[in-house]
Length: 368
Image (cartoon, rainbow, N blue to C red; front, side, top):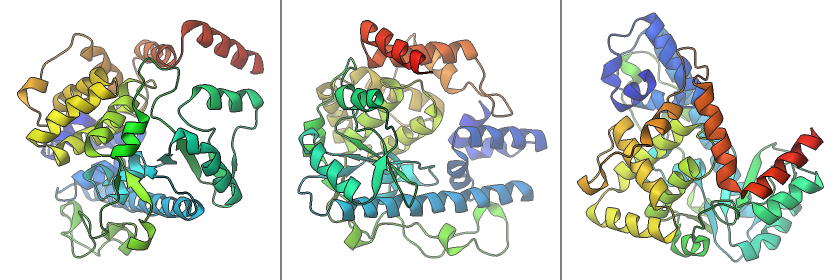
């Protein structure tokens, strides 16, 4: 796939014609990887029109970064009286910690993890601070509270930004039962704000000359020290386990190339002999050995992630996951509709037992 090849090695695009660039950018936009592509191409020479698109994508990615960090700080202040851990998840965690997985990443909702017993206190604090329910339907509310891994989603009435409050990383009805208490116990405070990357002079992006990008785009924003107190991130191994669970143990692989890129970046940044031993142990603890091993294998196959020999290999079902992950045409449109349908059905099958699934679909169908 053109997009995968470009992310793995930007040099493969040097002979692209206008049609090739159109296809690459369309695929990247559809997979929410345009900002990531911009980061990968910062030192590559590209056609002027492509450079403009990538520069705009970088500005947009840094705006999303700024918004994500602001929302994290708003949640921190709303939960200032809460004594438990508030763990940032997914994209916001990556950018707050200055991880490579956050560079250029598209970030949507704010996701946090708290202990299940603390949900009433956290919920009350957020409602008091201006968040309100997105799903007022009693059935949806009960479904989330009884069966899901998170509260019903909340949206701030002034800022129009969503927050998902998790108490574990997979639905309670899923086949695997990750050790949420273990994840919270191993979570670490956000590192000091000095960070992996800071502001300062940078090389001209994309191999073109001209005025520098705006200050927003040319600096890697981080939470200030005052905004980091009380916020945590998952341990490196649990962060990979969560990424793998989100990819292969929950959902239909929508956005899968972006999520697999997260895993690729995390593995590359954390890799050490000790890390790989701990990753096996934590994956087993969380009942996620199969999803983690598949995430490692496919990151290696698609993005060239360096992995130990004992993690390499190939499973006969991997080809179907690759087919689903790469199901885009040159216009960014979904392809392989039958495979997409199978993974959609699989996502529901993973989330709940057959009788419960049948009842849930019947209720949702009757409600229209």
